[in-house]
Picture 1 (cartoon, helix red, strand yellow):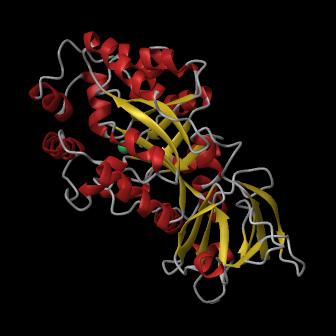
Picture 2: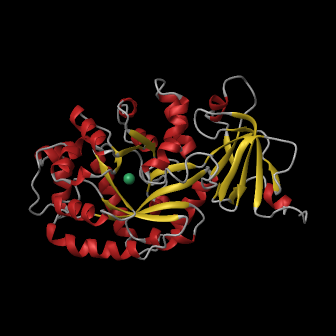
Picture 3: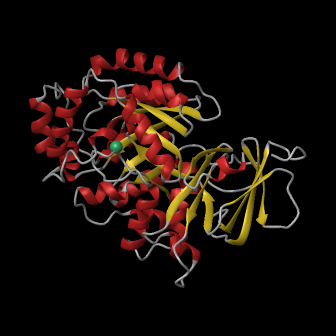
Length: 422
Ligand SMILES: [Zn+2]
C-alpha cells in the first residue's frame, strides 16, 4: 500500500451508483472513512486520498434490509414441503422444535448470516426463539435488531417469561451493529397480558416491538370465533387453557387491548380489512411483506400495493427457510417486480432499503448512500447491456451480488478485490 494514502479512506468506484431508489449516477463512486460514508458522486480522476477499489460493471446500492427472518431455522431449508394448510405447517414446526430443543443452533445462525451477506443483505431483523441468536449474532459482522420471541396464552406464565426475556435483552451488547426488540409471537399464541406486558416494557427504551399478525385465514377464524384448525391444534397441545376469542380481527384485537398506541413492526398483514388498514396507518406501524413465504403457502396477492398507496411503510422480509427457499432480499425483490406490475421498481428497491431501514428503526443510519450515514452497501454485478434501465437489469435473474460492506468493513468480496489491494 502506498505510504501517502490514508488507510482509513476507501473509494469504491462502479459502473453505477444508486444512492436512493430514484437516483442513478452513471460512473459513480462512494467514499468511505472508517464506518461511514463521506462522499457520493461521479467518479473523478484525482484521488480521494485513500485506497481505490474498482467494482467494475456493478451497481452499488444501499445494503439490503431483511426486515423479518428467523436465522435459527436456517437448517430447516427444504425440510417442509408446501403444506395443505398453515396449521399443518405449524404442526410440522412443532415436531422440529421438539427435536431441536436441546440442540445448539449457533451454526444455523452463522450460516444464515453468511448467506445473507453473500446476497447483499447488511441488516437483519431476526426473531430468536431459543436465544441462540442472542449468543451468536453479537460476534458476526452484520447489522441486526434481534427480537426475543415470547409466546403463551396463559396469563399466569407471563411475568416469569417477560422477566427472562428482559434479562436476555439487557445483556445484549448494543454496539454500533446491534440492537434489540421484543416479539410476542402472534395473537393466536400470545395472550392479552403478554402483549400488554411487552408493550409496557418497551416504552421509553431503544427497542422495537414485532409480531406475526393477520398471516392466515385460520388465524382470522380463531380470533373471531375460537374455532377451526388452529383451535384444534392448540387444544391438542394443551396450550389453549381458559383463552377466549376476542371476536375481532387480529389487528382490531391488538388495538382493542391498547397496544397499538405506538408503532409496531407487523409481519405479514396478509389479510387486511378497511378497518385493519386504518389501524395500521393510525399507529404509524410498518408492515413486512414476505414474498417467498407468502407464495410458499399459496396465498392470494398481498395487499401491500394498497398499503403503500395509503402511505403505510412497507418493508420486505424473507421469513425463515422453513417456509422459503431463499434468504436473499434480491430474490424477494425479483419476485415482487415480476408479480406486481402496478408497483414501480423504485418502490420495490425502496422496500428493501430505505423503507426497510425505517421499519427496523434504523432510518437515520442506513438505507441510503449519503454522507454521514453508515457505510452499508452492496455491489450487484449487472448482466450484459441488453437495453432497459439499470433497475430493470438489477432485477434480472442473472444479476448477482459480488461485494458487501457493513459499517465500512468488506464482509463479502466474491472477486477478492480487497485481498489484491492489500
Ligand atoms: Zn416469521
